[in-house]
Length: 343
Ligand SMILES: NC(=O)c1ccc[n+]([C@@H]2O[C@H](COP(=O)([O-])OP(=O)(O)OC[C@H]3O[C@@H](n4cnc5c(N)ncnc54)[C@H](OP(=O)(O)O)[C@@H]3O)[C@@H](O)[C@H]2O)c1
Image 1 (cartoon, rainbow, N blue to C red):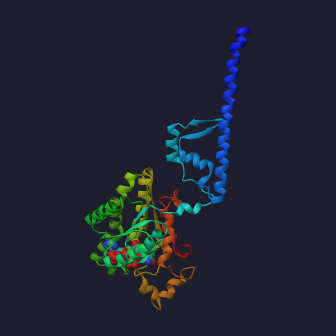
Image 2: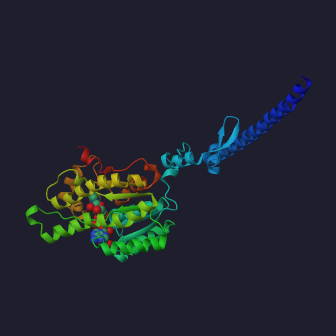
Image 3: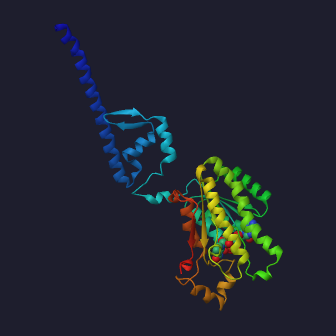
């Protein structure tokens, strides 16, 4: 009997020691939590919250009273299925494009320039593609003034070999591509019977084939890297009919179909594909019509907000679609038209 009681004593002691040890770990955890909560309060962000610290350590998780190793399979599932960390105190962080590289076709002027400057303002380095080298160089200076790097890559998007070379140059220079804005495009306003075959081919080459070539070249890198955002420039002309725009409307309808199909194709690779459908923006494409004393007021009367868009107004939407702020969005066509299509 006495021997049995003696044998029980060390077991009890061990249990007490273990309990104390556990409380010390609990004390340590509470101390760490308190300190990081205070730091988080001072910093005004969740960057220092205890859970953020723990997840950044990435191998410990709190289970009941003690720390345990998190199974690696759980970590892998988390990485695939978890949305980007919701940050209630600073959700604007999700719009940041810091350390990202964006490629913008047709960025020598108009909406492409507006997109490039918006992306640079959000922190991205930008590759500027187009045919007019001088204008591209001017945009490069504007990007540099925003504190970002820019690379001018003279490219005709209708020539697949030039697009492939451009892609190689961008990857050699920046080492990565996170965003592709397929913006280069042309338009022709003419009744169907007056559209020449060469003009028809030219408009499809730039708006449709150019889109295919650029997505194929830059998308290959994004799909391999399993991340990226592709933004295609459609038009409300691809969604609603307007006379004298048959060729242009057909190309923009094609871009919309392309957006839906490619979004499905690349979603498993983590690459998102969305399109913007602008209404009337005052650029070289339609400046003549907008500034015309007769046609201009007719255009504006069809827009509920009673004005046309300015090229810079494309920037915020491009940044949204390019960034993690739109991480759950793919295969969509976002209309930006002052309400024209809604009436
Ligand atoms: N403005 C609008 O109201 C409006 C409305 C709906 C949709 N969009 C679309 O938005 C996009 C941009 O239009 P925008 O208004 O900014 O027109 P824009 O001022 O005429 O600019 C067109 C851009 O496309 C580039 N480009 C044209 N053909 C090219 C080619 N073969 N290779 C490389 N770059 C080429 C031009 O660059 P280079 O001259 O240097 O080659 C230029 O930078 C187009 O896709 C257009 O269809 C515009």
